[in-house]
Length: 229
Image 1 (cartoon, helix red, strand yellow):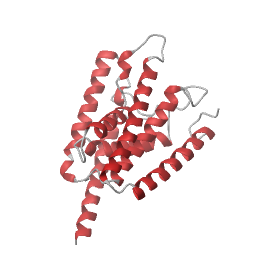
Image 2 (cartoon, one colour):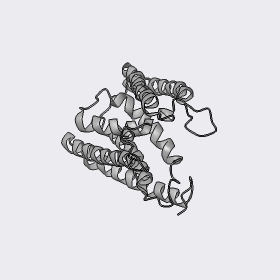
Image 3 (cartoon, helix red, strand yellow):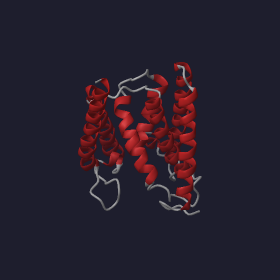
Image 4 (spheres, helix red, strand yellow):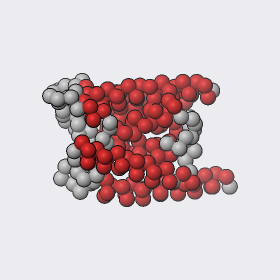
């Protein structure tokens, strides 16, 4: 198989995934008119997301010669976001606090990863569990976030800006723990860059992300005020 970024398998996966996701979300928005139906759809997506992120983590646990149970805990922004997002939808309520951190990092992280999946060449087969589960949990995280926005489950507002700060702090705390206790040098890219040969550690990317997020919130508020007028 041509398991390269922008190789044939990558393009086929993107085409199939994006097409199915777009069609599914279109019909969900068109026909799911009641809150009960929308909740069933959201929790179904969240359930699938939870299954695939857990399979992805288990594939890391048993991937090496010795079992590494500490790898059950996601050590990346996307992995942790998939896990927390699934649990927030399954256990939380509409517009819960977690959504206000998760929606933006999920959109940014999943789009970047699906466009440039650095883990694609882990094996000679795309169906290698760490590879396919990685692709699918990123895809489902993106679908989950778009569905939440389509069904107005999140009221995006600058008043909840602090959720992003708390979320990042929580992620980095987990990453620091994984680095100091389990020796995971690339945990949450605190020290090691997201792309080899670049300076893109979390400390470099975070200010850019926060700046872009502030502009998004400002734009949303301006559009909202314009519509009210």
